[in-house]
Image (cartoon, rainbow, N blue to C red; front, side, top):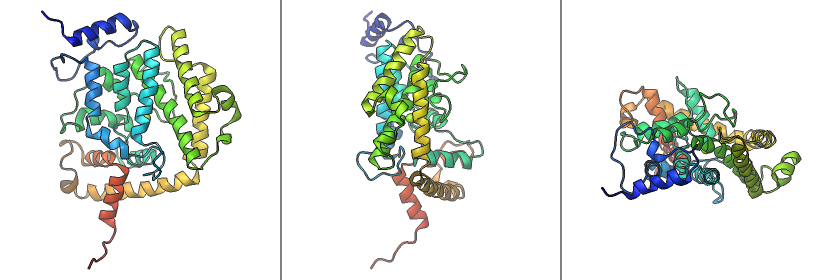
Length: 344
Ligand code: MG
């Protein structure tokens, strides 16, 4: 029997990856059984499926911090996702873990993010009877919403990593085993997400003139360095070395560097996310999404017929809203609530 290229790639994984790596040939598999691909491993295939989704393309018009930013150099949800993927792959490769699995989780982790960043997420969380979180929504996107409602049928490892990637302002390194991603690759994405956004949000806040370079607390600068690149480098190196030190028991950081990452995140919350500039915009985003939500809820047949039948109407309205880009939400709001001028 001829050996396929995919089987050879699986053989390469077994030969070069760490015994702690998640091997694609050992995946717990998909909900619906599929025949293996002749060229690509299961995790490569998942990564590719995510890139080809509409949800992935919409990330380019979703806000990271600044709502529908005009400046071309501000991050969007898409560039954030790519930065997370780059950081996570560097760590995975250095630890000889599965880069394809890491990349698939990273590229899929924010697919369920709302328009208007966390302002949108908080708004939906308050509106929905059962609450709303973007990581649960990301899972819903890949399981239920994409591919005309059939879902992407991803492997268990990728779905697990997406579902457990975030806890907002909670602990960066999960201590509760129940909340921890089952693979080290999933744990890498969680910490890489924080490393990416903390650093690029500072960079963007400086670009927007909300803070200045010299506002970053001196203790953090001393430990992590003065520049965006040096800080990421130091954080990534610390994750790699600390995880190796504990024999890859779990993805880890040294106490000192972890504390500086937490401090950096707190600095951001205080100086950027709760700055008057950001909070004024949050109020506008809340109004836009709340008004659209109520409007749609009263007219389900017109707006949310295509969302999963059998789910509550609130849930389907949230699917519609969460999928919107910032621009789509702004345009729809204008269309629904602004009077139209007479044209001659
Ligand atoms: Mg993220």
